[in-house]
Amino acid sequence: MSLLDPVVIIIGAGASGLATAACLTHLSIPYIILEREDCSASLWKKKSYDRLHLHLAKQYCQLPHFPFPTNFPKYVPKSQFIQYLDSYATHFHITPQFNRFVDSARFDESIEKWRVVARNVGSGEEEEYSGRFLVVATGRESEAFVPVVEGLEGFTGEVIHSTVYKSGEKYRERRVLVVGCGNSGMEIAFDLAVHGAKTSIVVRSPIHILSKELMNWAIELLKYLPFSTVDSLVLLLSKLWYGGLAKYGIQRPNEGPLTLKKKYGKSPVVDIGTYNKIKSGEIQVLPAIARIKGDEVEFENGNSHQFDTIVFATGFKRSTHKWLKVK
Image 1 (cartoon, rainbow, N blue to C red):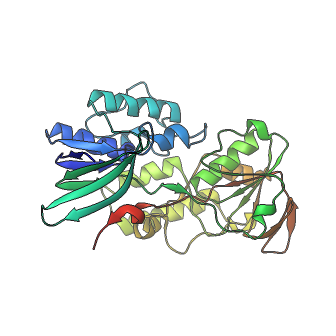
Image 2: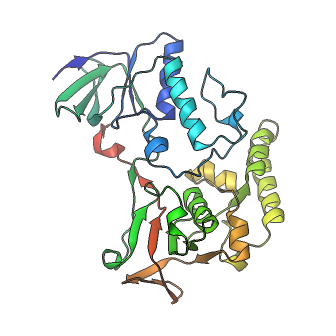
Image 3: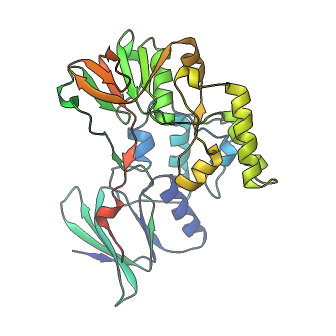
């Protein structure tokens, strides 16, 4: 077991971890990054669909001390964002320790430092690191989550999580059910419909749907107006733009979109064209799943439909509690 002693230990080499490292480099503060995957930004590089773009204009998404290239489009696509992150790491000489799976992190009061034990995935050896500060940059997205559904194990078709989905190209004419109505679920449903799949989506909870322009406008207004005022304006404009959603099987939450994000971390759906596909009938909205029998899915309203594929866009569960030891 070896002991390394930087000032700051960063766990996670996604965008947040890279940004933290760049800021520390800017201040000449020694650090080390531990990343369990074999690359930085693994969520973008390995677990995202091809159609993915940043939802906000690029000026709101660039990392510290390194703006996006001027020739990048307003809404940066996945491939260019990955290119940007790699350039960012190169520019600031960021070299994460890859294949380091953190087993524990605890604060040792006797030396007033954090002790982190990580397993080298390649060699299997344990490594111990200590530092005055610990930055947990593992994000909200850690381990893929698939809910327990009665009969799922007996489904005769294909079952995948959204982290495996890449494109709807191979699903043309197939009956596909997307479970989950967050941004990933809505965009995957749109991608499937564009590629000619017979697409349905489960919308179990109330959601806000906003346009990209409205999201950018809200960010700018927050510089000048009170939060509650902007939230009310955004809600009003979304109602004017999208009209009544209930007739399509979608309910709006009682609280505004910015309030939900602030209080619960629940983001509104940023529409890339899914709404029009729902409106035209190309995407069918269905309620929560009750149970599955063979290739037939029964829903809480009593109706049943047959599917060839189920895509679970049901998000992630955090794993921080497994290794972060705090009092």
